[in-house]
Length: 223
Image 1 (cartoon, one colour):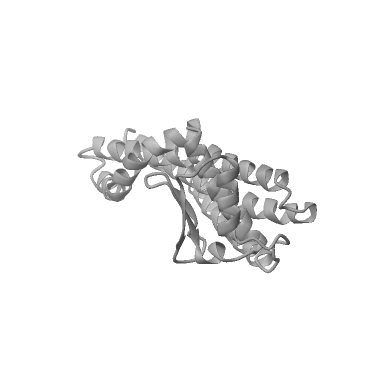
Image 2 (cartoon, helix red, strand yellow):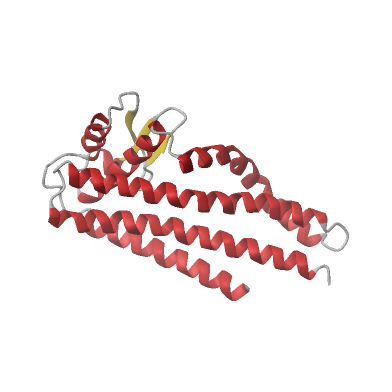
């Protein structure tokens, strides 16, 4: 089981490296239409008749995200004003989340329901698990409480997968359909979003193997 944990975390590190490498490679290539990430997001929203979402710049690199609470597409400084292939692909992807929200996409709705639960449990679950391991003989129920809370985090990582893959699909389909993305630019956009999605896959597997590891510890205490 420990070997699986090591492999899972090694996979996460490898995928993260590949994603950063892909971003570093393709951010050097300018989007031939000349549009910036912000402008692409704006056009994509308008094409889907969405006018109640704001596009704002957020500090940092690779900090792009969509916030369903205030309906904002938050583009990092690398994406907001840049016209690189990476900026355009990422901006379209985050806009894909805004479209999911507007269309009440099933998996995004479930993910949003889990957010407050995961936010709460993530702050306390490490301490509960540590306490559960230390007191496993005297109070075995504690580690199972920690496992149950950690399971919610694992569930969240797997629910996130269809949300991310669908947003990327929407982004690529729109970019091609709009005529803004040239055929020879498609591979760069596809690679960027593929490796971004793979980071979520690796995180989900790492979370699953970690969960199984804690379950094995709890079960071994019964023997």
